[in-house]
Length: 42
Image (cartoon, rainbow, N blue to C red; front, side, top):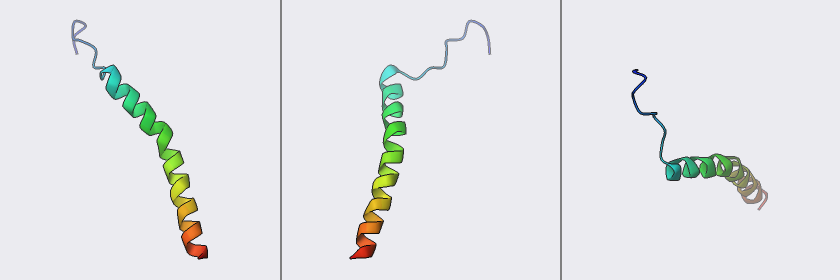
């Protein structure tokens, strides 16, 4: 890679979306576990 090449950074909107998905991932996993537990106890 040459020093004059542009930096390979995603646009701000994409970075924001990635950050949001990174935060939502564990929350979605926890919600799935809770839903399985609730459905299993019925």
